[in-house]
Amino acid sequence: MNLDAAWKKVLQQVQTANEDPGHSFRYMDLATVDAENQPVQRTVVLRDFDGKKTFSIFTDARSRKVKHIQGNDQVSLLFYDDDTKLQLSVQGKATLLTNGEKWERYWKEAGSKSPHSYTSAKAPGAIIDEPEDAYEWLQEENKHFCVVRIQAYKMTFLQLDGKRHLRGVQEFVEGQTNSRWIAP
Image 1 (cartoon, rainbow, N blue to C red):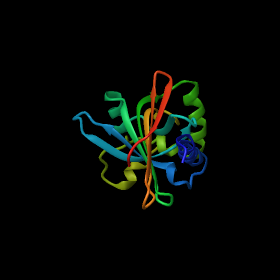
Image 2 (cartoon, rainbow, N blue to C red):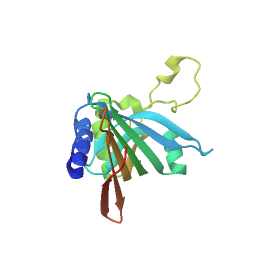
Image 3 (cartoon, rainbow, N blue to C red):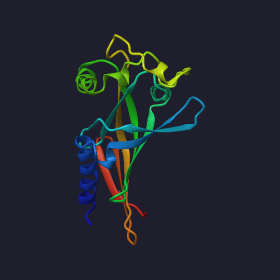
Image 4 (cartoon, helix red, strand yellow):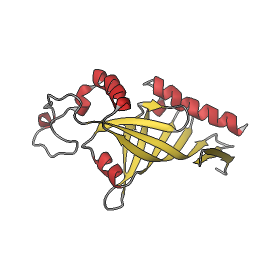
């Protein structure tokens, strides 16, 4: 198999997930590093992909992941499709958008579909007495809406195949894309 064709296939899966909420790559694991230098993982939803190396998710600006990124912008994403046995690991630098033209565009999309995800009076992780206490909404619709954009600097795919696994890596350095096969 040609390496360029393999990468095209992998990135097409991410692009499909960006457009199809039912695709396995729609949900991915995001790893950050907390203030104690400990890794923390959680599942997040892919909200945008530029077709090359920028991935976007939406979150509440008061969440722990935002605090982690403010302290250390190095993150990792992990996608896995159980049907095709395809894994994609992404290492990147995260930036937070809480205003501006792109943020407004994303809010128009997200706010119309699920405004309560970003307008809770209680911050994510806040201690509550009863589950119902988490369902009080703010009047200000987009006050806590945050876009996390992950700019990949390294991506690795692993295609499991019983007998002949395939693994490739791409690194983005100074405007250049360096791709190569690596042993699985």
